[in-house]
Image 1 (spheres, helix red, strand yellow):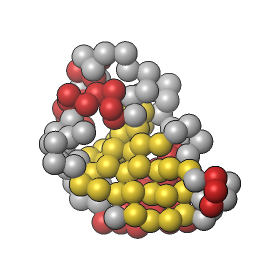
Image 2 (cartoon, rainbow, N blue to C red):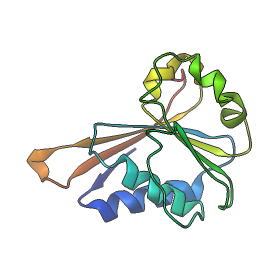
Image 3 (cartoon, rainbow, N blue to C red):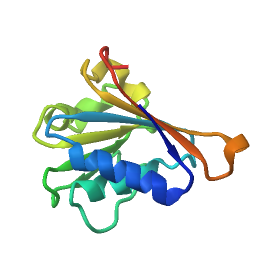
Length: 145
């Protein structure tokens, strides 16, 4: 499925709609260049889960946990992971296979740890369509990549 965003509010809304439908145990892989809108999307996704308050990128903490929504949200940013083995130190399996929903930025860095069934969200800029334009592709994976 491809969605088009013409502004930050559209990206937020698309995230919100996906968050409203998210189910426990689902893992979402959030891809996009720096400045593509991943954090805006994540804020919308959290809002769709009923999470209020600030939602920030967990770049320096690896994971932010939000428990106050209808289901817990575990927002990962694994950009700084040098070796997938580091994920064992934070107990990733409890998050990936628990009762919450995971949103993982830079998931390609831990590809071998991902279960086969995930949902990939790719946010791409297209400057020919405008500075604020984003193409958001949402697809189910069958091989965890």
